[in-house]
Image (cartoon, rainbow, N blue to C red):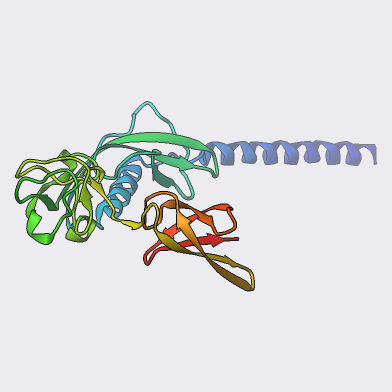
Length: 240
């Protein structure tokens, strides 16, 4: 009887040892998968192409190599994004973040060449001049080499006035233009207050010039000074 119990204990220990050995072998046979760096470059390429696709169909993206010293665990859902303040063309730095199964963050350098239409001054333009279609000349080229804010459609410029003077052939930029005032200082305006279930309107006198969407101030007949968003038609809108 004692011999049988001793034999049973020996067998149990052997079974446990074999089980532990099997788990160790499985652990060694299935290490954590390493992230494919070629996949990361493809993710970056697809993302940057999509970001620039609204500007032109002629896009050429070159993505730099991933640092070979990195040993990243394979990611379930890599998330690419541009750094704050970055434009989606020219020389850019792209980040790719992973949250699961292991968190990591890598940066890739890329160059995005976008061939698209842009506009230059068709003739000399003076400060304060209101832009018409005849003042614009369409060009085509790599806008990634041009200054930020380049005009790519006539609608971005027509009806706006020049804040600076430009010579003929100069690249038209958004920061050189000023939207026309829809509310002018001293003008009689309509102040419209909107809120849940109500709308109140009153007359007032504008205290400053403001383009559509800018903040305008006005004084009511009671002497109260209010602020709201300037709208076309001499309207100042206040939303509660």
